[in-house]
Image (cartoon, rainbow, N blue to C red; front, side, top):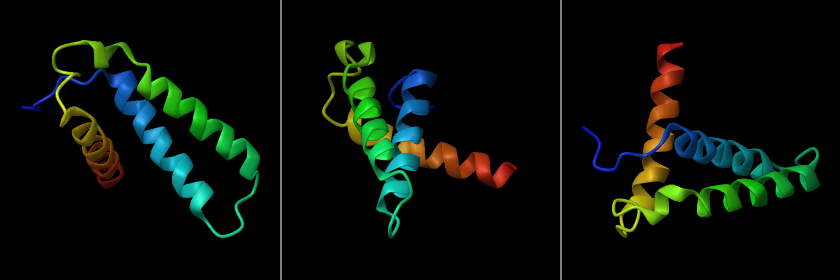
Length: 81
């Protein structure tokens, strides 16, 4: 059982953030301006998500666990494909 009940849309936004960051970190990324704008929009969506106003969302470890969970879920999904 997961320690924090993250909503699916929040996990998905974090996964998209990681994907966008990786694309932007590549040498000479294509469409760098679009990627930076997307990264900023995703950051705002994640930061402003209503989950952070809940008791579980106020726990200091919640943000770290969200990042870890997003990576783990993505890794699991790729392994199942």
